[in-house]
Amino acid sequence: MSRTLTSDEIARQLQDLPDWAGDTASLRRAVEFADFPTAIAAVGEVAEIAEEINHHPDIDIRWRTVTFSLSTHSAGGVTQLDIELAHRIDAVAASLDS
Image (cartoon, rainbow, N blue to C red; front, top):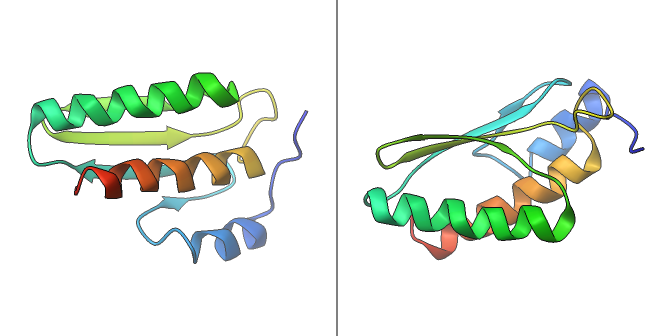
């Protein structure tokens, strides 16, 4: 099982993830895409990444806004795996010009 990160560790990591907010419980980012089909395409790409690394975000879809929430449930909070997934979600968002 992965080790949960401390508040200080999360704060340092979030410096490289300026669109994310979070605490020791979870990381969150809302992304507004150009339209609904693009939002759904982003969710599909993130789903493929999640399956690849066996780590699945909570996803809320509201028209063209997708909110991602990351937490390692088995560890009871945020781990390095969540940080890594946040970076990959950012790459998906950037590739779709959100």
